[in-house]
Image 1 (cartoon, one colour):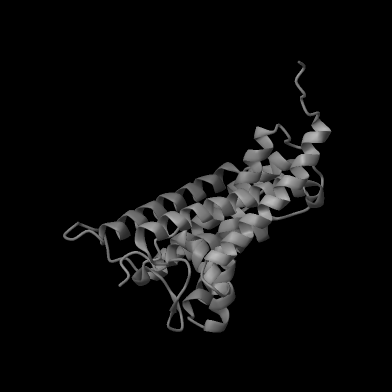
Image 2 (image 1 turned 45 degrees about the vertical axis):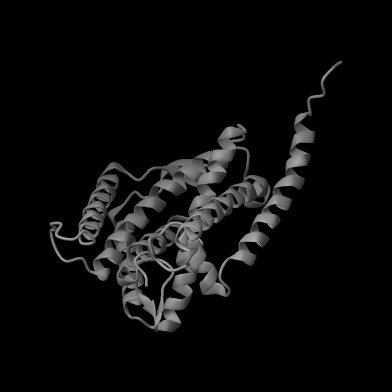
Length: 271
């Protein structure tokens, strides 16, 4: 008896049906079983990747923001980096060395502040200084800019057939503009204005899905050996939907696991 091996067109046709159906099922399930409202959904996304400790978070009025101060800075900083660095040239080169060194310094500072902050949660543990939410926000924003500066070129290199081998960040002028915009963004968060914080809270959580979706899109393209096949987003809809569906599956599993262990959507150390 001869076995039937689907041809490439048949496999693609099956995937074009299966992936969107799976995406709808996963999305529907996640929407049904997570807290109601836009901020509730933002909480559920943050719940999968952030400790959400109340004392380490900013608030919209009397309501805790979905992400802690550090994660708020990191994901909003990444979003800012994506928007600032996006261009139709589809640049896939890493930032020039001098800027990579600066981004590396930002990573080290982020790590030091994170470890110092963690130590304060341990009774009688030594720490370098008293952690502050504004510093968590600042170091998170700096790291977020670095995440965007690395992830966007990798995404461009993997997805696009016409990507350009040019550095995405190549001048101190660009860095200065990014730092200025990040400072304005951080000051907006620190203002405590609910009208401004509400959309930023939604955008911060949405960026979690964007980052994970981009990473999984890259992985799926590599697994199926479909790198550098596309010229426009509409052509790449299948791997993008697959990537973002995988991201939502990961978030759903982490939500389920954490809720099963804690029985609450609140952050750690919440009463």
